[in-house]
Picture 1: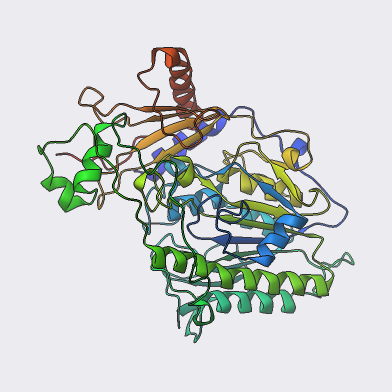
Picture 2: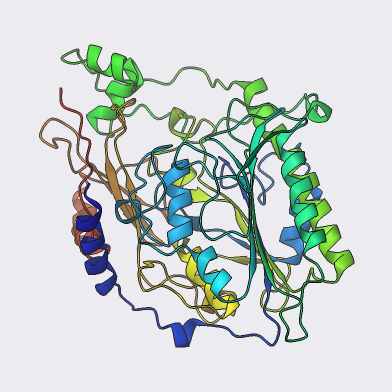
Length: 495
């Protein structure tokens, strides 16, 4: 897409935002500006960390974060894929606006201000430490006083890193290395003064490679919870009979390009019965074992901040860049518009505003993070940001974001069996649309009554009783597309 055209559409989208964001209303200007530590993990089921789904998984420092902070049960990502999600967090915009629709292709449009740039303007010392995973290089990006990253997904052991433009080879486990670099930054930037008598506030984003596959835990954790088992999800036994045709075709033939092409014209069954519950037990255990080094690292950083006297004035944010299937809907990975994919574990510790041990149910999205951080910092919120500050939610003045949640995923060339999909979600309902697939050919949409069907097992798209609700959801989806300046994707698979 031509950049200038996208920027024009972006402007139109921002102009249509409802409700509009008022910087004066949303900014919170504390006596002492808060610091920020933004810890992100890669790929994680939304209920893996704070809901005791895996009783054998012990993460005392993550548990401490939840006990001393708040867990947000309904944080959503606008695209459940690494690069687009990260770009949406940085810019506060949808993928069709920032341009990062796919993995490892490009950085966000440079005409969009990213929130660390605004924090720098507000007097913050900023650091990016970890996985960037957008354009295919590890060189420093704007907005950071300190930069340490790696190309693409990176590796778990003995990584090549780029530190402030210098390439270096480090020995050791990547999670530990990133934690060490964070400790060094916080130690070296403890006494710098702004000239006002106060220490210069910091913003650090510690974005881990963990827990992206192939899953390689630290050597010290390779045998942890070896007896751990995974329970069969409620949606494992669905037969896809009320799912669109592409679902059943994918289940039988696969989604990747060669297999999808080879399946053209082949019969697609009306049902695809589930077999016996199967899970790659060792592989999944290794994924969770990767969390153990993350948990240890978080504990080290929190202990340092406590020793420095900066812990309670630091907003600590923990989230995953997208969700992850552990067999739900007979799937692994993410991408799809089901809850396990679009919802992520999310917690914040900030005693000045959040009561320890609280659970917040309202809908939030990853594009809301930038505006929220900037509001807490008393910094300017760019008008291009499409998200909403959820400071009112943190203060107990609102339940969640005011607009319904709009989701988008764009068909990828390497896996055309997963079509472009758009979805709209309210607290009680979800509608999923496949706008470039033929409904007449059997690729109809999906409608779920979430308050009665939390596992999204019964598709009500053809239910007469749900027809009125379906009409409302379709209208909401069209309104969201207009509000956010939606544009069609550059790639559409052609048989």
